[in-house]
Amino acid sequence: MSATDRDFAGYRGRPPAIRWPNGARLAVSVVVNVEEGAELSLGMGDERNETIYEAVEGVEGARDLCMESHFEYGTRAGWPRIRRALAERGVAATLNANGRALALSPWLAEDAVADGHEVAAHGWRWERHVHMGEAEERAAIARAVAAIEAAAGTPPVGWHTRSATSERTRALLVEHGGFLYDSNAYNDDLPTMAELGGRSHVVLPYAFDTNDMRFFNRGGFTFAEDFSRYCIAAFDRLYAEGAQAPRMLSVGLHLRIIGRPARIGGLEAFLDHALAHDGVWFARREAIARHWRAGLGLEPWAPGPTHPGFAP
Image (cartoon, rainbow, N blue to C red):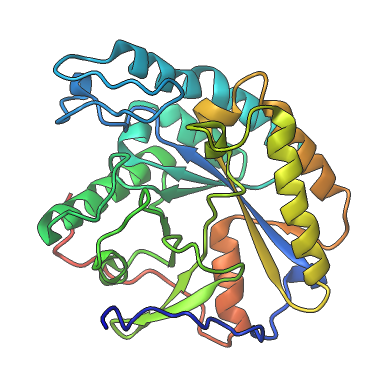
């Protein structure tokens, strides 16, 4: 047998006795993925075109103007709707942003910061890291950090790779010195800790089920109500469980997906349902990570010196 570093036990039903601020039962993390312009595109000088979107059709050997236009919808029309839905309800979110996306649309980071949202890192391009060499991955991390800091005014403290990471990704983030947490896990309803390089690193689990990506590729969502019903069901269960132990719910959004006119109502319905309950903490992922560390009695996190190997 191999892969002995896998953890199948977790908290075994006995999580730490940590309560969310003001005794909240449930921490809700709204994650807005910003990937527009960071998708693989021959027009952007990449090695190929992206193939994942609503119409499953790949274009090889030439620019895919259909795909490019599809992604552009997210920043042009989707973001204003999502931004308004969050602002009208006073909900703080985390923008999971690709560095190249913000380099092309820095005004979006400015909007987010002005509204009180966190801007975290989603890589330089919208791509997996699983097959990257160490030098390539270091460069991708450094380039993403530099672009996000330039657009948002501060460097990101959170990281989430598109799907599969490399086996060294988390260690590189800790070595970098500027990351409080990553979201490269899908194995729990609560934060966990990883000890690497003499530092305590927070792992905030993400979710692909309470996620608008399920509107794509026969994922089960067709109408706005499909999204809201599913997310509300997850909320209700975790809220009930939160009476005995802390719980966390991640809701994943994409500008070009939930931002469509026939879908945005699903987000609004979910937010309104959750906000009608007492004891719910809508929080940026950075705040959740810091609170979890404090609940475990760990020292407050502060960024360390950037490792010299991470030159953008």
